[in-house]
Length: 367
Image (cartoon, rainbow, N blue to C red; front, side, top):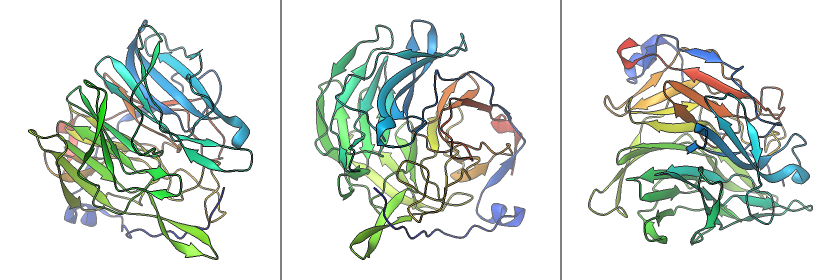
């Protein structure tokens, strides 16, 4: 289902002087290797997580979209890619009734939790799903958990204290929600945390380190034209600080926009070692699921790699070759390597590739 879209974002003027004025930093180059290993077949829009499988640290991908990029290729496949073996294999399908898009996964302790997504029918109708499943990487077993109070897809999931998972904003059937839904894995129960204060969005990016997290950009409904919703990309960045005594309380504050254009579906993660929230890939032209923008114009990857540094409270950019990928549900890391699984390339082809890159040490930053 497609709707008209109006795009808006803060203009970013590139140049060293502006980067200095906005508190950004440039870094020396890291490295990138697109020939790491590959999925058994092309897949995009996967929920992803890093887990400890039978063969050690493993990249996992769940649900998503195949090469045809239509409703028939929406699936509930599952993949495991042991990092040491450098060989991916397909697992039994996720035990849900139909394929899902825009699910999100997060590791909590030794388990992986998979949330929601939406199904697509032959007539194009889309329904947000409320399912929550827990996956055990060691045994390959799934366990159904308490469903989401408000089914959302294209949300951000954040793990906290090896007990809690926050779902921030996202799409629910007919519109975005401001809710922050809090799941307590210890007691298998949901509660409601402090609402997201920004414009409700889907396809946004976010990551967490300790009790601080960043939520950036996404797509909002900004009006209607001829009875159809108009979608706009939002350049908005928020920091949330979780109250250490009461996890339902979040103190929010607005942050300056990040370098470059506002992004849709980048890969994002919180890196506790670097004390940074890392953003990679994405596009500035949002779309439903086939890569054609809501404005009818094909989308293209535009996102490089940048980070919000929690120690200096400023943005940092990295001098890396263009990643050339979009349509991601997360960024994963093992040792010094970062991974983006599948996605769509700059020709809008669904990819079976796994992009790997590294970043320079923080001591190499050029202020």
